[in-house]
Image (tube, rainbow, N blue to C red; front, side, top):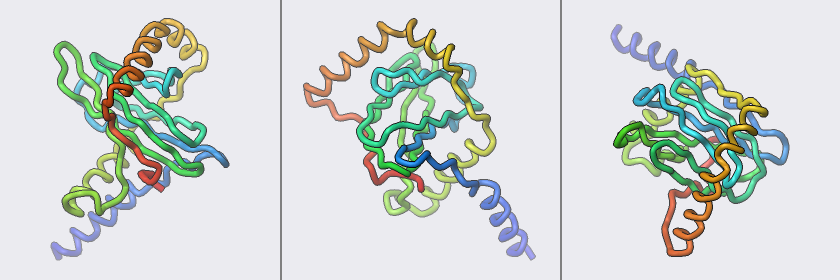
Length: 189
């Protein structure tokens, strides 16, 4: 009897969290930015694609960003900056988890791409837990849809930050700094 109940619970949880993620428009790529941890829940993280400001949101939300395929430098800002160098394929969906790290005064952000290849995890259980955690966050949270006017105004206010961070990134890259990678085959679908 216990086995039957366990199987039913597993099937039910799989159904809940196995929702279909949105598909990109023909010729585009989609990136989900999610926050799976409630630590620092009130702190907004600001998200960027190179010098383009995408918006900000706190825990309880996720953002979907549709963009051109190819190379991108995604970064997020809080008390710190976190960078991912990505190469995206048309027609694919990618997921970036905004991990919350303990900062000096505020929560810091650590961007981590979700690797949908179970062979890249120590155990199948670790892979399943990570996948379930991310899909649960997407299914239970509210999509943050940036307001174009608000984003434009905030981008103007962040002009110096964006300029300085892009310069800093280019200098560190030229000096050989290695950033977190999200290769073209690290897609979800």
